[in-house]
Length: 329
Image 1 (spheres, rainbow, N blue to C red):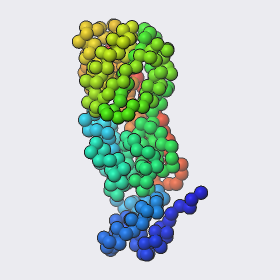
Image 2 (image 1 turned 45 degrees about the horizontal axis):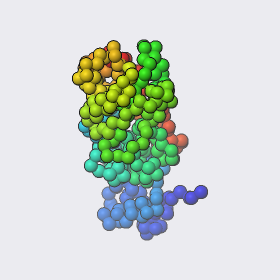
Image 3 (image 1 turned 90 degrees about the vertical axis):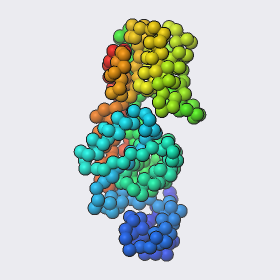
Image 4 (image 1 turned 135 degrees about the horizontal axis):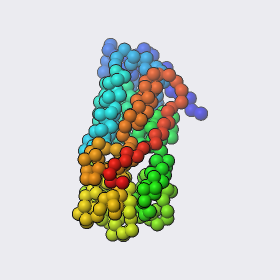
Protein backbone atom coordinates (compact mmCIF):
# COMPACT_ATOMS: atom_id res chain seq x y z
CA UNK A 1 0.00 0.00 0.00
CA UNK A 2 1.43 3.39 -0.99
CA UNK A 3 2.58 5.56 1.94
CA UNK A 4 0.59 8.74 2.46
CA UNK A 5 2.46 11.92 1.49
CA UNK A 6 3.17 14.18 4.49
CA UNK A 7 3.96 17.84 5.03
CA UNK A 8 7.55 16.79 5.78
CA UNK A 9 7.80 15.20 2.31
CA UNK A 10 6.64 18.43 0.69
CA UNK A 11 9.02 20.56 2.79
CA UNK A 12 11.96 18.33 1.86
CA UNK A 13 11.10 18.33 -1.86
CA UNK A 14 10.47 22.10 -1.98
CA UNK A 15 13.51 22.93 0.17
CA UNK A 16 11.55 24.86 2.80
CA UNK A 17 10.55 24.40 6.44
CA UNK A 18 7.46 22.58 7.65
CA UNK A 19 6.08 25.91 8.92
CA UNK A 20 6.48 27.41 5.45
CA UNK A 21 4.47 24.54 3.93
CA UNK A 22 1.71 25.14 6.48
CA UNK A 23 1.65 28.86 5.64
CA UNK A 24 1.46 28.15 1.91
CA UNK A 25 -1.30 25.56 2.29
CA UNK A 26 -3.49 27.84 4.37
CA UNK A 27 -2.85 31.10 2.49
CA UNK A 28 -1.22 32.70 5.54
CA UNK A 29 0.91 35.88 5.50
CA UNK A 30 4.72 36.23 5.73
CA UNK A 31 5.48 34.06 2.70
CA UNK A 32 6.42 35.19 -0.80
CA UNK A 33 4.23 34.47 -3.80
CA UNK A 34 7.07 32.53 -5.44
CA UNK A 35 7.58 30.29 -2.40
CA UNK A 36 3.84 29.68 -2.05
CA UNK A 37 3.62 28.74 -5.74
CA UNK A 38 6.59 26.34 -5.41
CA UNK A 39 5.09 24.62 -2.35
CA UNK A 40 1.69 24.23 -4.01
CA UNK A 41 3.28 22.85 -7.17
CA UNK A 42 5.21 20.23 -5.17
CA UNK A 43 2.07 19.40 -3.16
CA UNK A 44 0.05 18.77 -6.29
CA UNK A 45 2.83 16.79 -7.97
CA UNK A 46 3.25 14.50 -4.98
CA UNK A 47 -0.51 14.04 -4.60
CA UNK A 48 -0.67 15.42 -1.06
CA UNK A 49 -4.04 15.26 0.69
CA UNK A 50 -4.16 16.84 4.17
CA UNK A 51 -6.03 15.09 6.96
CA UNK A 52 -9.54 16.41 7.47
CA UNK A 53 -8.77 17.00 11.15
CA UNK A 54 -5.70 19.13 10.42
CA UNK A 55 -7.50 21.06 7.71
CA UNK A 56 -10.36 21.82 10.05
CA UNK A 57 -8.01 23.10 12.76
CA UNK A 58 -6.38 25.45 10.27
CA UNK A 59 -9.79 26.81 9.28
CA UNK A 60 -11.37 26.91 12.73
CA UNK A 61 -10.83 30.62 13.26
CA UNK A 62 -13.28 31.65 10.55
CA UNK A 63 -16.91 30.97 9.70
CA UNK A 64 -17.40 27.86 7.60
CA UNK A 65 -18.24 28.35 3.94
CA UNK A 66 -19.93 25.65 1.85
CA UNK A 67 -20.07 25.69 -1.95
CA UNK A 68 -23.10 24.21 -3.71
CA UNK A 69 -22.40 23.17 -7.33
CA UNK A 70 -25.33 22.77 -9.75
CA UNK A 71 -25.67 21.60 -13.34
CA UNK A 72 -27.52 24.71 -14.50
CA UNK A 73 -29.18 27.76 -13.02
CA UNK A 74 -31.90 27.34 -15.68
CA UNK A 75 -33.42 24.33 -13.94
CA UNK A 76 -35.86 25.27 -11.13
CA UNK A 77 -34.98 22.05 -9.27
CA UNK A 78 -31.60 23.52 -8.38
CA UNK A 79 -33.16 26.84 -7.37
CA UNK A 80 -35.47 25.13 -4.89
CA UNK A 81 -32.74 22.86 -3.53
CA UNK A 82 -30.42 25.86 -3.16
CA UNK A 83 -33.09 27.69 -1.16
CA UNK A 84 -33.48 24.68 1.15
CA UNK A 85 -29.72 24.38 1.60
CA UNK A 86 -29.42 28.11 2.32
CA UNK A 87 -31.91 27.67 5.16
CA UNK A 88 -29.97 24.70 6.52
CA UNK A 89 -26.66 26.56 6.23
CA UNK A 90 -28.05 29.64 7.96
CA UNK A 91 -29.36 27.53 10.84
CA UNK A 92 -25.84 26.18 11.37
CA UNK A 93 -24.03 29.48 10.99
CA UNK A 94 -22.44 28.59 7.66
CA UNK A 95 -21.99 30.82 4.65
CA UNK A 96 -22.89 29.37 1.26
CA UNK A 97 -21.83 30.06 -2.30
CA UNK A 98 -23.51 28.67 -5.42
CA UNK A 99 -21.69 27.81 -8.65
CA UNK A 100 -22.58 26.16 -11.95
CA UNK A 101 -20.28 24.01 -14.06
CA UNK A 102 -22.08 25.03 -17.29
CA UNK A 103 -19.15 27.16 -18.44
CA UNK A 104 -16.23 25.81 -16.41
CA UNK A 105 -14.84 22.25 -16.47
CA UNK A 106 -15.77 20.38 -13.31
CA UNK A 107 -12.22 19.60 -12.24
CA UNK A 108 -11.14 23.20 -12.61
CA UNK A 109 -14.21 24.42 -10.74
CA UNK A 110 -13.66 21.99 -7.86
CA UNK A 111 -9.97 22.88 -7.67
CA UNK A 112 -10.79 26.59 -7.56
CA UNK A 113 -13.49 26.18 -4.94
CA UNK A 114 -11.22 23.99 -2.81
CA UNK A 115 -8.97 27.01 -2.23
CA UNK A 116 -11.93 29.21 -1.26
CA UNK A 117 -14.36 27.16 0.84
CA UNK A 118 -14.46 24.59 3.65
CA UNK A 119 -16.69 22.02 1.91
CA UNK A 120 -18.17 21.38 -1.53
CA UNK A 121 -21.59 19.84 -2.26
CA UNK A 122 -23.05 19.14 -5.64
CA UNK A 123 -24.01 17.20 -8.73
CA UNK A 124 -20.69 16.23 -10.31
CA UNK A 125 -20.10 13.66 -13.02
CA UNK A 126 -16.31 13.49 -13.27
CA UNK A 127 -14.61 10.23 -12.17
CA UNK A 128 -14.35 9.97 -8.39
CA UNK A 129 -10.54 9.79 -8.39
CA UNK A 130 -10.32 13.02 -10.39
CA UNK A 131 -12.66 14.80 -7.99
CA UNK A 132 -10.65 13.64 -4.96
CA UNK A 133 -7.47 14.99 -6.55
CA UNK A 134 -9.10 18.31 -7.44
CA UNK A 135 -10.59 18.79 -3.95
CA UNK A 136 -7.17 18.33 -2.30
CA UNK A 137 -8.52 17.29 1.08
CA UNK A 138 -11.50 19.67 1.23
CA UNK A 139 -14.65 17.63 2.10
CA UNK A 140 -16.66 16.91 -1.05
CA UNK A 141 -20.24 15.56 -0.97
CA UNK A 142 -21.64 14.08 -4.19
CA UNK A 143 -25.40 14.27 -4.74
CA UNK A 144 -27.49 11.88 -6.81
CA UNK A 145 -24.92 9.08 -6.98
CA UNK A 146 -22.92 6.94 -4.58
CA UNK A 147 -19.20 7.59 -4.26
CA UNK A 148 -17.04 4.50 -4.63
CA UNK A 149 -13.61 5.73 -3.49
CA UNK A 150 -12.20 7.00 -0.23
CA UNK A 151 -12.09 10.78 -0.06
CA UNK A 152 -15.68 11.46 -1.10
CA UNK A 153 -18.98 11.57 0.78
CA UNK A 154 -22.30 11.07 -1.02
CA UNK A 155 -26.06 11.34 -0.64
CA UNK A 156 -27.84 9.23 -3.26
CA UNK A 157 -31.47 8.26 -3.98
CA UNK A 158 -33.03 4.82 -3.55
CA UNK A 159 -35.16 4.84 -6.69
CA UNK A 160 -35.50 1.07 -6.58
CA UNK A 161 -37.65 1.22 -3.45
CA UNK A 162 -39.37 4.48 -4.38
CA UNK A 163 -40.50 3.46 -7.86
CA UNK A 164 -41.53 -0.04 -6.78
CA UNK A 165 -43.76 1.48 -4.10
CA UNK A 166 -45.06 4.11 -6.55
CA UNK A 167 -46.02 1.46 -9.13
CA UNK A 168 -47.81 -0.53 -6.44
CA UNK A 169 -49.86 2.47 -5.32
CA UNK A 170 -50.68 3.42 -8.91
CA UNK A 171 -51.96 -0.08 -9.59
CA UNK A 172 -54.26 0.28 -6.60
CA UNK A 173 -55.56 3.46 -8.26
CA UNK A 174 -56.34 1.60 -11.48
CA UNK A 175 -53.11 1.86 -13.53
CA UNK A 176 -52.43 -1.12 -15.82
CA UNK A 177 -50.08 0.00 -18.62
CA UNK A 178 -47.13 2.22 -17.77
CA UNK A 179 -44.80 4.30 -19.91
CA UNK A 180 -41.58 6.12 -19.02
CA UNK A 181 -40.21 9.38 -20.39
CA UNK A 182 -36.47 9.02 -19.79
CA UNK A 183 -34.00 11.92 -20.01
CA UNK A 184 -30.76 12.25 -21.92
CA UNK A 185 -28.67 15.43 -21.55
CA UNK A 186 -28.56 17.30 -24.85
CA UNK A 187 -25.65 16.07 -26.96
CA UNK A 188 -24.43 13.51 -24.41
CA UNK A 189 -23.86 9.79 -24.92
CA UNK A 190 -26.89 8.01 -23.52
CA UNK A 191 -26.63 5.76 -20.48
CA UNK A 192 -29.76 4.41 -18.76
CA UNK A 193 -30.51 6.37 -15.60
CA UNK A 194 -31.06 4.77 -12.20
CA UNK A 195 -34.68 5.88 -12.59
CA UNK A 196 -35.08 3.87 -15.80
CA UNK A 197 -33.38 0.82 -14.29
CA UNK A 198 -35.71 0.98 -11.27
CA UNK A 199 -38.76 1.47 -13.50
CA UNK A 200 -37.96 -1.52 -15.73
CA UNK A 201 -37.54 -3.79 -12.71
CA UNK A 202 -40.90 -2.70 -11.24
CA UNK A 203 -43.26 -3.03 -14.24
CA UNK A 204 -44.47 -5.80 -16.56
CA UNK A 205 -42.57 -6.67 -19.74
CA UNK A 206 -44.84 -4.65 -22.05
CA UNK A 207 -44.56 -1.54 -19.87
CA UNK A 208 -40.79 -2.03 -19.66
CA UNK A 209 -40.68 -1.66 -23.46
CA UNK A 210 -42.68 1.58 -23.32
CA UNK A 211 -39.73 3.90 -22.79
CA UNK A 212 -39.00 7.03 -24.80
CA UNK A 213 -35.69 8.84 -24.30
CA UNK A 214 -36.15 12.61 -24.35
CA UNK A 215 -33.02 14.54 -25.33
CA UNK A 216 -33.54 17.23 -22.75
CA UNK A 217 -31.79 20.55 -22.25
CA UNK A 218 -32.10 22.13 -18.76
CA UNK A 219 -35.49 23.60 -19.70
CA UNK A 220 -36.98 20.28 -20.80
CA UNK A 221 -40.71 21.05 -21.09
CA UNK A 222 -40.53 20.91 -24.91
CA UNK A 223 -38.65 17.61 -24.75
CA UNK A 224 -41.41 16.18 -22.56
CA UNK A 225 -44.07 17.29 -25.01
CA UNK A 226 -42.32 15.63 -27.95
CA UNK A 227 -41.56 12.55 -25.87
CA UNK A 228 -45.19 12.04 -24.91
CA UNK A 229 -46.28 12.33 -28.55
CA UNK A 230 -43.86 9.54 -29.48
CA UNK A 231 -44.81 7.42 -26.47
CA UNK A 232 -48.56 7.55 -27.00
CA UNK A 233 -48.21 6.93 -30.75
CA UNK A 234 -46.09 3.81 -30.18
CA UNK A 235 -47.92 2.56 -27.09
CA UNK A 236 -51.51 3.87 -27.30
CA UNK A 237 -52.67 1.57 -24.49
CA UNK A 238 -50.53 3.50 -21.97
CA UNK A 239 -52.69 4.75 -19.09
CA UNK A 240 -49.96 6.04 -16.75
CA UNK A 241 -46.86 8.06 -17.66
CA UNK A 242 -43.89 8.45 -15.33
CA UNK A 243 -41.44 11.18 -16.34
CA UNK A 244 -37.78 11.53 -15.42
CA UNK A 245 -38.43 15.04 -14.05
CA UNK A 246 -41.30 17.37 -13.25
CA UNK A 247 -40.38 19.61 -16.20
CA UNK A 248 -40.61 16.69 -18.63
CA UNK A 249 -43.93 15.70 -17.03
CA UNK A 250 -45.22 19.26 -17.49
CA UNK A 251 -44.40 19.09 -21.20
CA UNK A 252 -46.19 15.74 -21.43
CA UNK A 253 -49.24 17.23 -19.72
CA UNK A 254 -49.28 20.01 -22.30
CA UNK A 255 -49.17 17.48 -25.14
CA UNK A 256 -52.04 15.53 -23.56
CA UNK A 257 -54.15 18.69 -23.41
CA UNK A 258 -53.45 19.40 -27.10
CA UNK A 259 -54.66 15.90 -27.96
CA UNK A 260 -57.78 16.24 -25.87
CA UNK A 261 -56.72 13.46 -23.51
CA UNK A 262 -58.44 13.57 -20.13
CA UNK A 263 -56.02 13.69 -17.19
CA UNK A 264 -56.21 11.66 -15.00
CA UNK A 265 -59.28 9.93 -16.49
CA UNK A 266 -57.52 8.56 -19.60
CA UNK A 267 -53.88 8.93 -18.61
CA UNK A 268 -52.29 9.59 -15.24
CA UNK A 269 -49.03 11.57 -14.97
CA UNK A 270 -46.25 11.43 -12.38
CA UNK A 271 -43.05 13.50 -12.42
CA UNK A 272 -39.93 13.29 -10.29
CA UNK A 273 -38.57 16.21 -8.21
CA UNK A 274 -41.40 17.63 -6.12
CA UNK A 275 -41.23 21.15 -7.56
CA UNK A 276 -43.59 23.66 -5.97
CA UNK A 277 -44.35 24.73 -9.56
CA UNK A 278 -46.18 21.42 -10.00
CA UNK A 279 -48.98 22.68 -7.77
CA UNK A 280 -50.07 25.24 -10.40
CA UNK A 281 -50.29 22.99 -13.46
CA UNK A 282 -53.73 21.89 -14.66
CA UNK A 283 -54.28 19.42 -13.16
CA UNK A 284 -51.72 19.75 -10.38
CA UNK A 285 -48.80 17.37 -10.95
CA UNK A 286 -48.22 14.29 -8.81
CA UNK A 287 -44.50 13.88 -8.19
CA UNK A 288 -41.99 11.50 -6.67
CA UNK A 289 -40.50 14.16 -4.44
CA UNK A 290 -36.77 14.51 -3.92
CA UNK A 291 -36.94 18.04 -2.62
CA UNK A 292 -37.84 18.54 1.02
CA UNK A 293 -36.50 18.55 4.54
CA UNK A 294 -35.46 14.89 4.51
CA UNK A 295 -32.99 15.27 1.64
CA UNK A 296 -31.72 18.65 2.82
CA UNK A 297 -31.11 17.49 6.37
CA UNK A 298 -29.20 14.44 5.17
CA UNK A 299 -26.92 16.68 3.10
CA UNK A 300 -26.42 19.15 5.97
CA UNK A 301 -25.71 16.34 8.42
CA UNK A 302 -23.04 14.84 6.16
CA UNK A 303 -21.43 18.26 5.67
CA UNK A 304 -21.52 18.92 9.41
CA UNK A 305 -19.81 15.61 10.18
CA UNK A 306 -17.17 16.30 7.53
CA UNK A 307 -16.50 19.79 8.87
CA UNK A 308 -16.11 18.48 12.42
CA UNK A 309 -12.66 17.26 11.44
CA UNK A 310 -13.04 13.88 13.13
CA UNK A 311 -11.36 10.97 11.38
CA UNK A 312 -13.58 8.10 10.35
CA UNK A 313 -15.33 6.46 7.40
CA UNK A 314 -16.66 8.62 4.61
CA UNK A 315 -20.44 8.92 4.60
CA UNK A 316 -22.60 7.02 2.09
CA UNK A 317 -26.24 8.03 2.59
CA UNK A 318 -29.36 7.02 0.63
CA UNK A 319 -32.73 8.77 0.64
CA UNK A 320 -36.02 7.23 -0.53
CA UNK A 321 -38.12 9.80 -2.48
CA UNK A 322 -41.75 9.97 -1.39
CA UNK A 323 -44.88 10.48 -3.48
CA UNK A 324 -46.49 13.91 -3.42
CA UNK A 325 -50.01 13.03 -4.56
CA UNK A 326 -51.80 15.66 -6.59
CA UNK A 327 -54.64 15.63 -9.13
CA UNK A 328 -52.71 14.30 -12.16
CA UNK A 329 -52.64 10.79 -10.69
